Image 1: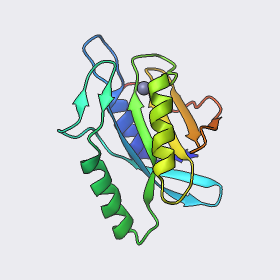
Image 2 (image 1 turned 45 degrees about the vertical axis):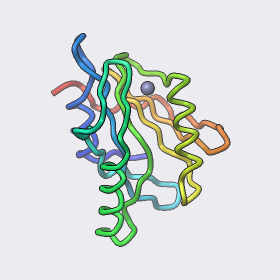
Image 3 (image 1 turned 180 degrees about the vertical axis):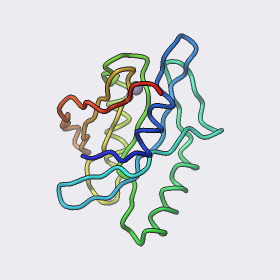
Length: 149
Ligand SMILES: [Zn+2]
């Protein structure tokens, strides 16, 4: 998996540091070429999303409207590939709620591909594929340069 500059910039902007920061998240848009996945864009929290320190409740309408727009603009090359959100942990681990939600989202995918699920921690990223069956495939520790800007 490869992350372009735009998603990295977005993740840096929302790293949860300090006691007053809230969870943030959005969807991931990318190119799929065989086994290779390139993340091109991460959507930012919208006005309608509820942001709390330990909870990010997504209002899917805005995010999915954007995914459809990019898909049309790129003639089907750029598509919805998964979800991202932040955790107030250095090296984040998914909660049981995250896992349940990811499995539901994976089952919803029309192209039957696994969902790419990404958590942005203060010092590292957690990245995994979630299949609709609940099978998980955690990608090796991902050393993205996400030090706060
Ligand atoms: Zn979470």
